[in-house]
Image (tube, rainbow, N blue to C red; front, side, top):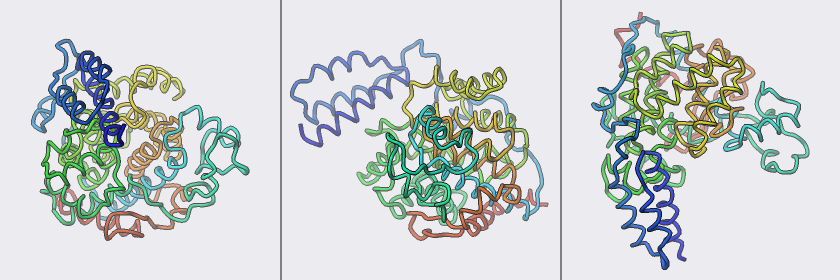
Length: 440
C-alpha cells in the first residue's frame, strides 16, 4: 500500500472517530471502510465526503453551534465586561506575569508531554520528588523504560537556560505579531496569511497542519478548518488563545471574540470553544481573584449545551465533592478519558483541576495540572498563564522564573531569542489601545 493511501486511511479513521464524537451514526461507513479490499485514494475520498455530510442523530443531547452569532446566542448569562480600573504599571505587571507563567508552566510539562499520570507519578517517585514542587529532576542513570533524552533536556531541573522553542509559546508570539501588524480588527483570513508568511509548515501540527495545507491549496475559512481535518476539536486552538486574553483586560466577551476569529481558521465546535474559554478566563483574571469565579466567567462565554461546557461543569462539581484532586481526576477520566490525549475536552478539565485545587498558589496550580498527565506542556502553560495574570510578575516565585533568564526562543519569523519582558511591554501597547478608558 502506498504512503499516500496509508495517509488517507489514517485520516479517514480519525474522521470516523471525530464524527462519532459529534453525535453521528458512522456504523454504515465503518462497514464500507472494512469491506474495501484494494484500497486507493478515490475510495477514501468518497467515504470521507459521506462522513462529512452526516448530521448528528436526533437524540444527540448537545447543541454545538458553528458561527460566532450562533455561539453568542447559546451562551449562558455572565459578566461580559467587569468594569475595573488599573494603572499602566499594574497592567504591565499582570501581562508580564502571564508571559512568565506561561513559559514556566510550559517548561514544567514539556519533558513529560504525553505521559500518563501513572507514569509521571512513577518517575517522580523514583526521583524522590513527588509531589512535584520544581522542574522535573533528571535521574542518573535514567531508569529503564524512560527516554534517555531526559539527560539532555533543556527543560529539566538544573539544565534550563531560557524558554526553549515550543509551539505553545510560538502561537502566543504569533498572536502578538498579528495584532501589531493587522490591528484589533484582524480577521480569520489575516491569521491565515500571517501563518503562511511567519511560521514554517513543519512546525505546525494536527489541526494547524491541516489548516495550513488547506491554505496552500487555496481554501478560505471556514473550509480551512473542515476540509480533511479530523483534528478540528483537538487542543491546537486553545493553546493559541492566550494573547487574545492578554489584550482584553477585564473584557472576557471581547477576548472570546478575538479567540473565535483566530480559532475558526483551523477548528470548529469544542475546538473553538476551548480557545474562547481560556481567553475569557485570562481577561477575567485581570479583575477577579477567586479562581472558581474566573472559571465561571470563562464558562459563560461558550455554549451551555456543548460537551465542553458539560465537562467543565462536571469538573467544578467534582472539585467541590472531593478534597483530593486525584479523586476528581478519576471522575474526569472515567467520563472523558475516551477522548484523544490531545483533545480539547479532557485537557481543559486538567487545567480546571489545576486552577481549582491550586488555591491561587502558582506552584501548586501548575504542578497539579502537569501531574494530571495528557498534554502536559499545553496544560502547564495555560494554567501558568492564568495564575501569572492573576498574581502579576512581582508575586511569582523566582524559583520558577529566574531560570528563564528573560529569554524565549521561537520559530516565528523575526521573534527568535526575544526578551520575555520586551514581549510583555509590546503586549501592553496593544492592550492599552484596546482599553485606554480603563486605565486609571
